[in-house]
Image (cartoon, rainbow, N blue to C red; front, side):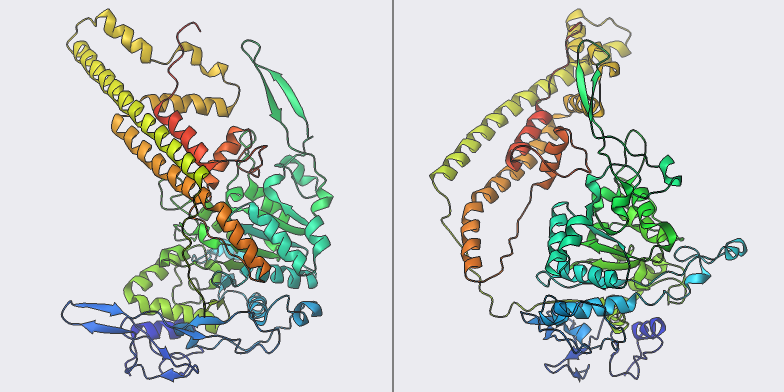
Length: 631
């Protein structure tokens, strides 16, 4: 057996396991992957290589990913999960650590099967992992930078290790996260943070807490941060300067010109004593929220509510892949942040939250957490880089190591995480699943709507061609006028008149605009009026595809509901997947109605995604002309 570079890397990351001698971890490189038989025993690597050489084409071709049946190896209690579960064979080649943590959980949750043995296993290993700190945490400041002599005087608190819940769809990850909350509440920890992708999941989180016996807690102590004002949630005289409470009323303000009036909705009043304990639910969009008038941020508000550096409650990142677009500097802080850069604002806020709450009990949760190595950057609490690891200089050194060693190193790191109790990743086996394609779901009403839509878009297309022709003519006139000016000539009056028709009027000055929404609308009109014709066509066909995709999805809703109701009557659980939810268009409609990005999408009427797409493209390719002067 050859001791590969990847296996040596594995040994450095986990000194207690030597892959050269161990039967739990076999050497794995980009040429060899361990294979496991049906009973979980290791099979000769030479006879079961996961990849084969293809001398004719000069490249390696990987076999299909294999899975093995899964059941908890070390946990001995809990009811069996209601559906067969499997695990990747590579992870199946290594055993998890022994269970040393005594779970604090109401007995009925275990004996009544409110959490299955697989869900309990995740909670146990997660809590066990939270009892440890990352290696060398007191020897450096931040992630990957050793302390200077001045920093040592002010020793940083140890950084608590985190846990990755990588179960696949349908495994009940939301219920498992609720199990973490129950366990920590049972141990007296009063404040926890639950971050997810949508405000809709706030109700799902409350439902999962109710299902585990926390009905009153879910009703009274589960808060949606996006609904709260930018005010202090902590009863403290020091915080009043940062976040002040406000009354819930509407103030009528006269416009500065004419008799125009507008309404400003003020933040609702709050009592900080209401938020002394509970689960603070927030979305990733909420994390980057900033109040325009004061500059207050949701992140500062959340950190203040947690209590700062010594906060030791849960921070659970549900669907954590939303923070995957990350770029870190040598100190472990986000860099190159912003639109069209290598690091998203969401990822930057997640990294900052983790850096500023080093004692928090972090749970990462996603079925697709690691689509590529660079997306691991925000998962600093897994302990794959930093002092005491193979990559003491930080995440960029870790990435360079993966690039050098290839796929085998990635597999070994995953095996190391499982062997140290930092990862569980199971998925439903889909054994005995059936697939059926339902046809002929349309009716006369759907057919009529679709045909009318095609006529409308055909009409829009003809108007678009006229619009593009007008834009081309105007640009030719502009070019002609520029040539006359360059040669010092006088521009004819008819050309000057044409230019004035297309210029913005002095009646659209900034002093007339009463809020940012009107200012944004004016700027968009000016931008759309100046678009090149080739850009117009691209916008048109992109909106055309979105419209008919949404329309096709909508036409299937009634049939899908009928099948779901019948399945529920037969005792099945229904999971409905959507090609597109239309959330972006719904959020745009909510903002147009006066709700900012933090507020839930609550409108008086139903939001139609195709209708919003149609209105948006009309505004883009047929913007209002400038106001005539003097109007």
